[in-house]
Length: 448
Image (cartoon, rainbow, N blue to C red; front, side):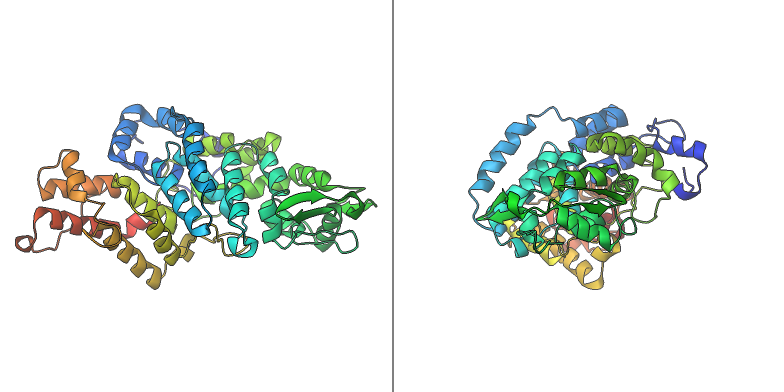
């Protein structure tokens, strides 16, 4: 599986998406277990890694897709707290806490994916209640049907207001939603033209957001013939959604986007390589089945996918806290994550966050290092809640050297870096804190 997916023969493509079965040549090990948890969540705790090693990839993916915990009860508890929040800052803090505590990390990871793909910003919406409902809707549909997700998002007041499409009159069709619907959310560039945008906007007339509620005003709908994507008829919003879902470009666009999210940002898959998944996805747009196919695949567990994504600021920060088995001030964490370039509820454009190498620059690397130092400090804004020496002792380490081995296994699954620290000047706790900070600033720790 070391070849580029673009160059594999068709018989190799079926092997690429077939389920990974460990063998002597490709054994299941700590590195692959941690790789799975980084992609399907935000990192993991030591006990989860050990359980994954014992259970193997099949049962571990089962658990990530369908946890034993009562997810609905967990989400209801967090929803109640979020409903009492009157600010975006409060919503950011609660979402980060949910990411840290959730028994279903894949659900939160996919909610974050849709937050970027179906992007709208609190800056344009200017309503915490609408943005709260928007993210809750994305969470409910994150592993469901994309057809249902698309229908809901086209009637989401936050989305329409955020795109400047809160009023769509027959006399002045509004392209604010029609353009991203075709260009970003479904078909992708090159699969439509400006006429399609104008005509789709006419089909979407009649929908308004009034006092933060969606309303349909029949007299404002253009009920004359329209021509969209090579078809002619008296189309409505429902017709436009049906047409884009039937177009083969939509499933390809979404599979490519999820390929970057779950498998690799460093290569661009060919149409042939993603065709099996795109064809299957187009049949019913079952998101969970597509995600499951990717997470179980030989390709996912191949060198081509390993550490081929840059951690976003959220992944970086939540991963540190999760691995440390700690709870910190997520109000402060939200501010620090925003300083790294990812302010939740504020995707920068309708295309969401660019991701990849855009996360990394000289300035953001300095800020990542500073965040790691602040999280690991024994005082300051995070109150010394992260204690790597106590963590290592809890899992069997009895010396700084054994703690170094433990932290390297937990965080990067490789040999620990050279200490380079004058041990005589530091106690064990200080030494291990310094080592943890060193590991968290390694290049490989920046990669998912």
